[in-house]
Amino acid sequence: MAKRLSDTQVLARWRYDPVAFVREAFGVEPDLWQADVLRAFPAEQCIAMKAAKGPGKTTVEVWMALNFLVTRPYPKILVTSITGDNLDDNIWPEFAKWMHRCKWISDRYEWKKTRIVSRENPAEWFISARTWSKNADKSEQAQTLAGAHADYMMFVLDESGGIPDSVAVAAEAGLSTGIECKIVQAGNPTHLEGPLWRACNQDRAKWFIVEITGDPDDLKRSPRISVEWAKSQIEKYGKDNPWVLVNVFGKFPPASLNSLVGIDEVLLAMKRHMPEENFRWSQKRLGVDVARFGDDRTVIFARQGLRALPPVELRGQRTTDIAARVIKEKLEWGSEMEFVDDTGHWGHGVIDNMLAAGYSPLGIQFHGQAIDPRYRNRRAEMWVGMTEWIKRGGSLPNIPELVGELTTPTYTFVNGKFQLEDKDQIKTRLGRSPDLADALALTFCLPDAPTQIDDIRSRIIREQQGPMAHEWDPFDESRL
Image (cartoon, rainbow, N blue to C red; front, side, top):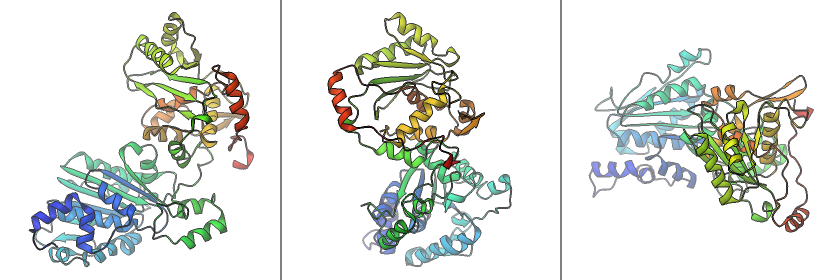
């Protein structure tokens, strides 16, 4: 501890600079990704680390918990893990290790078998280890982290990839009160469900997500993961092997057989830079999903070939106002086709107003007959077209809510026809209507076509590019 500053001054600095806390309290230098997490800690309420095997994520959890312990007044910190053994053998000894690295902390706090307590206020100032039983029902599991309240509250979920949602939901409920309440979770992406999956998927907008990889070719890889080991696993099993995806690359395994697209495929599309020559030949289109109910959004999604632009979102607008905004987007961007969701005639007013203004939108009914007889309806057909586009190189705007909307829906085969999960069922599981995804899907109601502007140049560009192969076929029997 700095000699020229009082304890109060040092703690105030450590509170807003956890990197300095680690350097000065423990005498170590965090890895680059660890420093990024520590810098985010003071401002972010919810932090999730999706990691490959062995990058040092548990250490960062401990550093943040100890920082919260010593820099906040009367904090309560609850820690749990995927099993009681993992709690006892992994994260809890890690607390002891780092406490004993700093005499200032060990003089003021006492490490016990299941608690770390302030020597002056042990009943009100502590870190507590909590376990849950896999044999318990959801309500019993939820009690692991239930009932704790304080002005300064923190929950740590270690190896959260396999922790039940009910445990995490109880922690999230604890965020509702207090001056400063936080949740930190970390784990390997082993499950397509649970707190880590939910944070990285449908609830992504609420979380600060850190992705930690051991990819030998990634400049931002964790230095604690052996390059030789990572290369040997890739060589032995292949890059697409689920075990390699989870443990080397820190990615969720492939989408389950009844999911259209995986989370990492969507995230890759959101990071993809699309040169103009790859899409300028294609027709400009607008997909318009008109809100059905008060809590739904009207969404206008623009797409040209392999590039989708950030959408326009409207709430509580009349059909005349929606039609006017669609016309505005058409004129400013120069769209050549406008597809309006007219399922149940919700979009009929928009279509009528645009027709009256001299424009020619195309009304699409999601439950209508598909062009391809393999699909149950137009909605299934359009969604498959959209997810194929993502897989073969489409570029998406970086919208966290869109991740969950694209990856949540499932599919089945009914009488041999491909059928997408009902929209109301998706809304129940997702917690909102997939308006963004539906609006984008509308732009796939017809095969992509060349723009009518400078058609000769477009044809030349297409010939230079050549055809793009589909990477996924929902009717491939090898997937079933």
